[in-house]
Length: 383
Image (cartoon, rainbow, N blue to C red):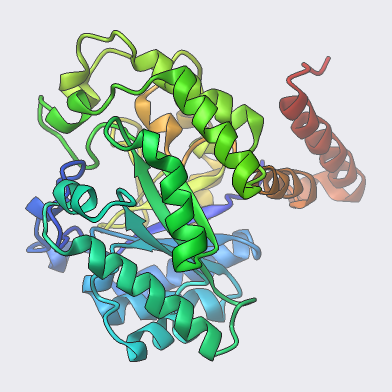
């Protein structure tokens, strides 16, 4: 049993944009009194650091920067516990140099700004608020400039999280050009269309309208960008992107979103082996979906007990082929070879959470973990 690599902590449920692929903007935090306190979340960060001292904490929402002091308190807790903090935000709160500098000095080590397109009109139309593109790009430029002023290039990473769907997938090259050459961010991370995030209704018009992506064409586009920009793509991930959209081709019930009976042709998720998601109420799960059991964290040590005691949940999840398997947060294959190497390093180097094995057992386990990781990469089964 390896320790988890990522702990996701939700700050709030509301958002100040009106994205067509998400319904958090229709929610409120009126039941905040029932949320796990910020102090309680900070305690979970400390517990997570004991489980994995090299772990990553993802501060998420809603739009987490709408609760600015809570946001920075959690980032500070990550830093003080030696953990890597990550966050995806929409950029609307980062409007001046002062806050950009605070983000570099006190905020997450990895700051991602969401963009839906390299073109302002398309981004604004899908985000539901005029001017959203300009605010996001301004936030990115402020962050890049602040990092340079503070000489923090080696301490903070500035990324763009791009959503790829039917109307914009042929613009991926232009997307990379904007992010890498014009803005000067470190990376464009690609997330692909899934049913609307948080959507619980029986109909999902945006998902139904935007699944028309040619599988072979998008693979060719990704390979072209890989060669042009030196991205170091993982070929297994590129193939899975093609498989994902091939799975959607011709499906007749995609308008039902998460209620669709369509599934991916392959199992491409490994959230259950690397993630713990803790929602606003302190309920821990191995993925964002509520269809799998969770545990309310009430006592010190519950986080570790949940992780170690969830093999029955993992067994269920290994047969799950829902659309979210392609998501950046849960996909089995890293998009780049560098990212894949980090996963292999974690598998080979992390101490097993089995103190009863002793030194000899620990070494044997590490050797086997490394062999299994290589086998997955080469797709050769172990005896």
